[in-house]
Length: 252
Ligand SMILES: [Zn+2]
Image 1: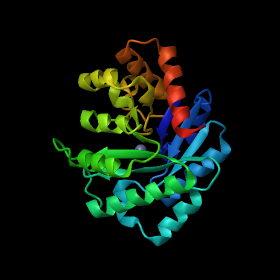
Image 2 (image 1 turned 90 degrees about the vertical axis):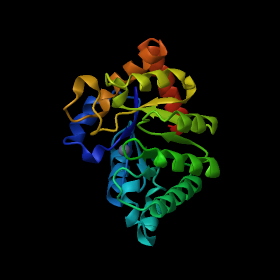
Image 3 (image 1 turned 180 degrees about the vertical axis):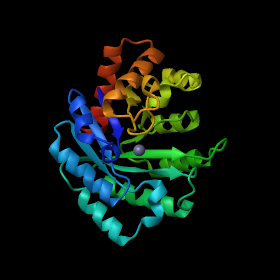
Image 4 (image 1 turned 45 degrees about the vertical axis):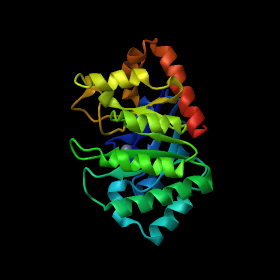
């Protein structure tokens, strides 16, 4: 199993959670600012199955300046860094302007190109809106990043189709297991099998049997199980395919 999206620095007991997850093929831990990106590289240097992503989360985009850029450029050169992110567009929290977020997206693309990294995208609009999805879609179509994933996919089919047509991946999180998300499971059944990934987004988004608890990398098994069911595949087969997809994207 592979957890393609965790924030280890936010777990209450990261060491213990990593011990429980020592059987996982790989875990990508993502920074959301300079300090957490530095922390991600430290986890990656200390644990054999952990890799790091460095970036400035869209809700932190107003912090971007030349000093932040220089720090992230330096961190991106660390040996076990495999992705530029978490980046993307977030209009849900309204924490940074559209212009600030697009400027950081452009910077994260430069970071990816300069260091041969995949990109990890977050996207979130306010309720009943899709302006973040449309802006990210336009940006992807204009910039065509080499390797990328839409993380914690929420079900915007137009964005998923555009992303997979560009060679991108779609990653499902714990919300795939929620009873009400029947439509999301249908969509998971329709997308190209060779583009599907699973993740926890831990400590957020705990999957169905663990709701109300803090999420951790090992719980990715429940999302993988839901994905296998959506595809009508045995668990082990879906595990093999999603492990291979993640390996191809992140090159570990
Ligand atoms: Zn995240």
